[in-house]
Image (cartoon, rainbow, N blue to C red; front, side, top):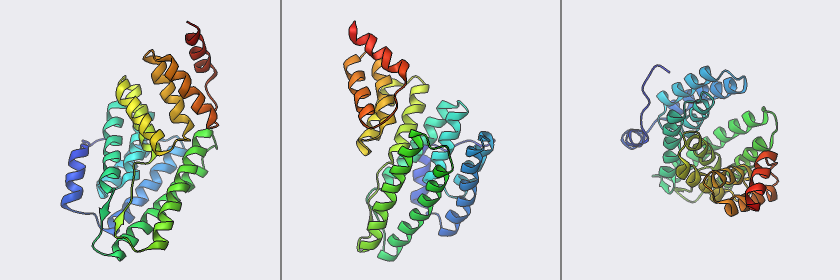
Length: 246
């Protein structure tokens, strides 16, 4: 993509040293929205460049890191995907319990997040409505509802934030494709902890358990995915059933 990518530690150091301005975030949003439009059109390399441009403008823009991570997975650049999605996760973790100097600043941050979530929701709604897309749409709407409730309360100067389950899922998938099963398992479990009804995370965890020879755990994850309404891969189901018989 023409420029070296910063590590998560450097990202956080930059974030602490010099916070981005609201104008930076607005300019970055333009590139981020373009990146998601390009992803929808399957112009993945163009999307990766757009997400990187958004990050270059605003080093704290979580959704642009997520987009670049998804683009890198699609381009089979799994090591790069791990790096950028780890940075995304770390930014969300750093935001947990964030304190603002005034209620006005905290509310402005929440309204900005609503704007960004609305754009993410629009992007997901424009895709084919697979079970995966429906899961993400449900999670985005849940997050939007929580922030809207915080806006209505309006009294706190602290931000309650967790790593979105779709970020943990994508990071787990990057680790899985890179052959790092223990790391993939950790991230899939983090996705489930954030959203116990996340069928795809349960399904992916079942694959990890199957690959590492823990068949009873694979069967339990398969059942959890099915209970969540996720349509399991028939080959995976059969493989687990066959191993259960042995």
